[in-house]
Image (cartoon, rainbow over all chains, first blue to last red; front, side, top):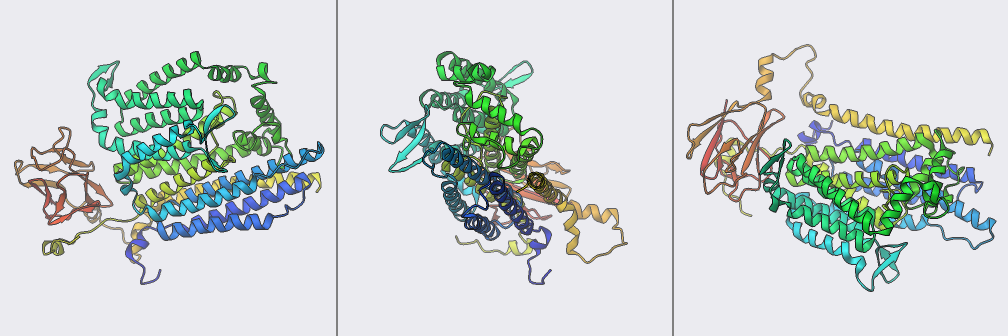
Length: 466
Length: 157
């Protein structure tokens, strides 16, 4: 330990070297798996392999350096885990590209454009935003000032796909916005903005929301007028479901709001009220909407619809079965039998080629990511940071649950992207912004910053000029 | 590439994936032990000299009670143990002060790493240690006035 190093550095190591080591491992895993795809599919070493892995490595290194400079004490595993998930996603997208190209060749159809380079570009954009968030947001508490602006902006983004010219409907769900040749899903950005809004709003309002006015069945229930925000959240998520036909986003927002309400007030009655509202909403949606009914019947009995609306889920289940315990091996399965294998069903492709063993590793990676986020929430000192970190982790957790649950037929299938893995720019960028915010909060939580006022010094201190 | 080699590569990849997961957990495990392990390293090593328990306790929690020295509650003593003490006008605060200059949730005093820390909970008129308005959790030294509204408190041994 050098003499000049500050006292604080000795007490709390920053763990940045551990982070670098893990990043290196993640990168090597990426290289190995890419080579494996090449060997197994008979494509040989991919043509642009070294450029691609070089770019990915450089991006990871840039993020590491920025964290080193700007969030020195941040959690050491958040970045490597998210990077590995992104890399696995890239490898899987590349693998599905190869499969599509080979199929096109067999059918002597024109070669499809590979998606992996587009995804790589999005990763680069995500890194730019990641760096921007870490540099611009020096202290997460400053975000609390813009609570209502974030809320308004989030709502606008949520309804933006309904706007006449720019809104676009893809596969029945109106959740795209197309401006020029550039399209994105505003709901992905809205998810972060609304988490920021919920955190700021609940910090201020939680006292009145935690007040118990009436007791019923041993649980305290809030008074009627405090139900306002809950009802608004419910109506908004139903609105998303009705007008944008997006089951996943609707579920995500309502779940996020209820969980954050529960964390802020520590009242179980909110969870119960939330479940009641959820049940009412679900029953209403089932009654009135064909597409919801359809999803549920496919969920209950996909085999009757194996050739039509259940084709995707049935193929995905066959994929998992083919994978078995140890998996078919990268490049040795048939992932593109499932339509949308590289977006909604990328988990099915991974389940087939890496098997149960790989799936468990993958889910553990998500678990570690979410646990670190919640740990940050527990250890940060300010209430806004606590709620924000918890909310962001819950967003990730809900997404993973909803999509992995849907693909494995645990719950009805809803179209959400798998965080970091799925092909899709908006989702990748948004999830990396979440990681940046979590790193920023965890830096604050772990920084050994106890500001000491010296007793003698303070007595004679002149009022500080600002 | 032969079937055998492919199988080996396949299993190796799964093994390495799990190795990464285990490595992550290893890093986390070291992380959990951090505070207990690294605190004494600042001092020169004294391998076989067990510290007297009394000294250790004194170093651990400085100050055992919070005394109100000014304001309507003058003379009130709040014993400190391990729980945090909240100060404000809200009826569920530990120290409820009837004072127009205090906010309903004004400040909290809590133990951390062997000291008592004061944090302002977004009060209107601020929490002051001596003549310094605090913005971040700040160590409250023994015997130094802590001002909340028109009430002054002091940490005593």
